[in-house]
Length: 346
Image (cartoon, rainbow, N blue to C red; front, side, top):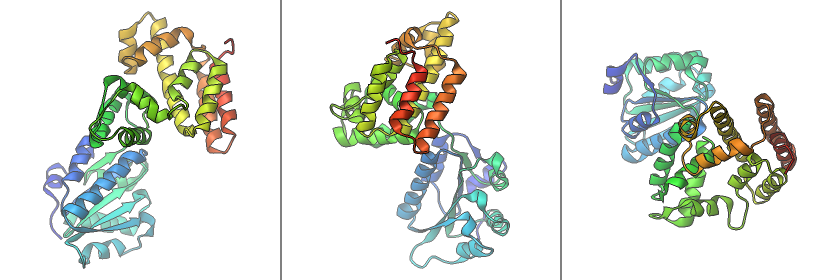
């Protein structure tokens, strides 16, 4: 086996990668001997990086791809796979999922391989756990590049919108970027699906404004998730229930609806606190990341939204999420949530 890669030699002992863009660059430029680890709960980022690794090694380096679950590997399996020559390719990329479940014997083989270096092979390891939850991930973090995937912060979402739009070769107006950020609720899978739909509908090379976006994500003549949020935080209970029912009939994903409403509710609560303390548009924008047109809506909602106790509202969202995931009637779930967030005066 050869020695560690130049990157690993130079950085060993300080291998925590903090930015997605940095890990993406490492994967896109990986070569023989690379050992890359993706941890954390955000499956979208993990899946993207794994797909990038497969594309890199299969197309650019002519490697075979082997996939294993960590708990499938018995003593000697990993060592054998690393030492065996590939029959049909120049090398092999071994992908191991659920790395936190790897057995003690395999851990020893893995660490030995990393210390000695890999020849004609590379490793891509993934886990839904984070290093503080797994001893093997903590060890790997001291030896090889490890990126932990968390749900992105609100401030990171416009960058993700731009990245995904560029990949789909579409251009988005500023208000469209803001609406997509609002629509996704920090859920990158939901954002990616929306951008893909826009690209398929409008075609590559086009510029898409907010009207063109709403037409696609809500369907022609169909429901509009932004309208649902408006009706709830304008305290219009009847119209909100009608909007929820319409969205469900048109096939909107219930979990995504709750995620969007929860994200919007958090912004509304934050805006209310700032305005009540004497702040204005600038302070609300700085705290929530909201720009026009969402900023104008938030300021309006500080006047119109029903002031329900924060703990009560948070519990209502938790119950709604649980209800959707356990088979409770979807309209009933949303009706209960809407009744908590509105007063019923209108």
